[in-house]
Length: 403
Picture (cartoon, rainbow, N blue to C red):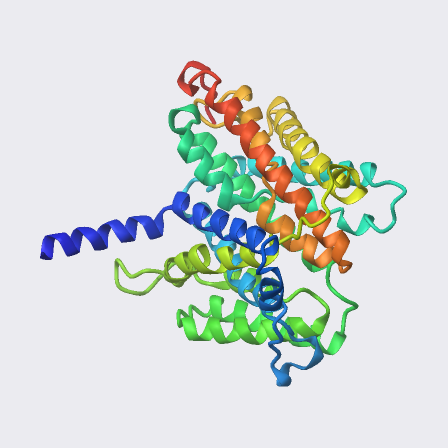
């Protein structure tokens, strides 16, 4: 019985730590929201997502519904974990040099600029659609990682690291876009509080403070200040993640750093709680009265063009330029043919795209059509990327390019 219980616990721990199972939970929750929104329980689903939930002491600037708390509150934890993941890659050695960081960063920049321009080109002449230009700029790491892990030997280890670094840089750039372009008019007294709190968090890091309570309370106060400042409050997760100490200098050998402790503690909660809840709340689009020609409207068409066409072209084109100019090298045992297949997967823009769409479009019809465009694009990009990589030659036979 003891061995069985120990084995069961170990199996459960492996499931909770598995990105494949975590992405499956996100997908199932999202599909559940979509099904409920088109079922006899649609009104109950809508009532749940818009259920009033306001803290009076936060005032009118605070989240007012369950859905708003998920998007503006819990998603701060998602962005915190994203920042911690990229810092772990920098510390662990995968991105420990400028040349290693350069290739995914350049690819992420290309994968941001080209789809945004593609969206603007497709939606030209439709002023109501322009505000959604940033919807196709980010790649969803939560979905791309399980796909490349499932591909096994068809994707080299170095290429996996490259794609995940690119997806994380994409998320960080997406957060910057949200902060700069999807906030409200700046309220300078609150901005002053934001600057003071940010300075306090940086000072705590420099002083070697490792108490999680210090960073946690500072992050919560920063979130509140950002609510009033006009910037998006999820930026608090980014700042807190950047300030958490990544080492334990002066402490016992083997002690986990604050960064490692927070990543280990919050990672499963974000994977199994925050992201599925976000997908459940945001993918529930009513298809009542849906017609195929609706997908040809400016917003969904611009999103599909940006994610399915602009995203791969931007990532692949920028990567080609970087390697031709000798700015950076491809990872070991990785060919440009493999990079192209991975670039196709970059069209999976699920989580961040849904998040930006919710900020960009207040009109229900535009928000619904944007979610449909994101969902269709992400599924299509996942399918064509998987098919390309699955039925291409094994990476070992491509010839290697060392980096």
